[in-house]
Length: 173
Image (cartoon, rainbow, N blue to C red; front, side, top):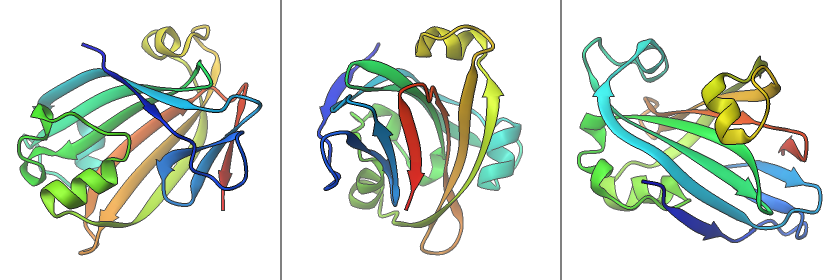
């Protein structure tokens, strides 16, 4: 079941910028202040090839995966798929997830993230992504694969964000 929550813009540069929840990264909108998150799926499952690769897990490891959609100014623009090793976050699937996941990881699970690596590329929207982003199948999207690392240098979170950039800009500063 989808849950939605409002998130206030936090960037000092003005009302047309919204914190994406990523350190040093912001999505800048064209006249669309305000952000909302809708959760779509929250599941515990066996790690797929991507989770094994990006999180350094063994085959058969259990992960928590959730998908959510981010709207800015009422327009859907980001489809996120977030994967965590279940062993590191026991019971997280039973919690209400805030917009700021990194603070939840730190305060509830003692996991502090200190850096992230991102890979960006253009991809075509699949039927599922197109449905949630309200774009045509095959529409161009910006894909951001982000792996966040803990203090010990190990990968903690793998996040794939698929962005419809018609009305937003990705800025790394």
